[in-house]
Image (cartoon, rainbow, N blue to C red; front, side, top):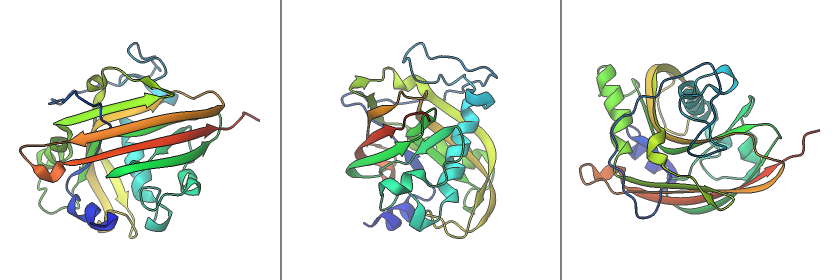
Length: 244
């Protein structure tokens, strides 16, 4: 199945995962509270904790912004499809640099990032909105965004160091409005819709200048709804530029 066809099939069930071999998580929804202070992560130094607020914005709102960025890019410019290193910079205009994911197979990507940028990559993640007429109320939207995030095996490594206890990083974005342009990779009708996201992210503090390797893997085997099942393994070679 082509990438576009896959997006259409999963239109109601968009979720993104990083996987650790051998550990299966059957995950319950964990609500993370937001604060106005950036708080370091005690489990994985170098990652923002889910109750932090990098740059004065809650972790949950950064998850919302990742989705808004993903929808804002026209299909031809969107790094999720037909990736090129140049596409990695499209739409990146704030202190946090967003990384798109891979939905199947194995892929190697290279991305050049300015010094001083934090980096946010999706792990196991889903978002749904009211563009789908089958979603009649907030509970429908929440369930749609959440239910694909179980039965995942997730992992992430940075420069060979494995991040620990990723099951503790599940967050709930809360409801927000998302604007969908006419040209979008999910083939949604244009408009502004009430949306909800839930899932796991690797949210990195700024990296030292130089070359870094971020590897993300995912495998989902859902015995209840096999439509969620997929596997992917992708690595970003991150070239962090010197600060001028």
